[in-house]
Length: 206
Image 1 (cartoon, rainbow, N blue to C red):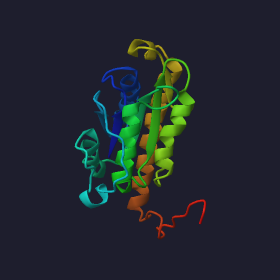
Image 2 (image 1 turned 180 degrees about the vertical axis):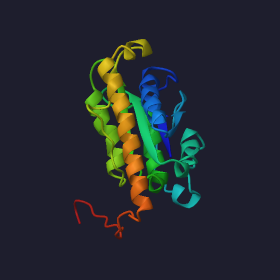
Image 3 (image 1 turned 30 degrees about the horizontal axis):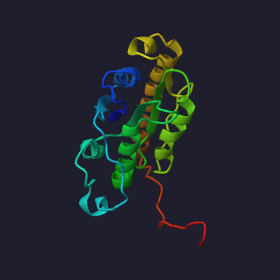
Image 4 (image 1 turned 45 degrees about the horizontal axis):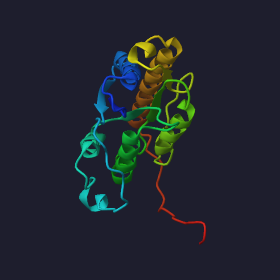
């Protein structure tokens, strides 16, 4: 089993990476393979809603999003990490997730997801809510911890001093491993994913 951990910070080895690395360590102790995927520091184009991905099988913009899409069928769970920028996820991770889920969300359905946020002081819970909405609109079980999945600090060294935050990351990793193993046991026992219905689309005027 494998979990993809997405680092949505423009800093490859910053605070968000430090939090994700703690989660990855706990997962690996549970014999779950991990990969930390950095979205990079270059701008990521936002989704245009052109729907060309429905024909192409990926996004028309060739960047980190398509690199991640190529990994989705080979993973069993995903953890998305972001710094807090104005009480929201980074611009990179927001554009990245919009396009990833719009073009390839079906490849993540029924796979566990979790969000991790890193902040200096405030805005963590708002960012946490934002990131979790990608999972809850896509038939994905959401993995929690003993507290909201957040760490605090201005530098990686600060994060390493956040004892409660790091413990929350370790518990998250173990919880993700437990759920993955439980889902695998269910599959082995013949439990199938829920039956789907034909999608109903409405709006507020009809």
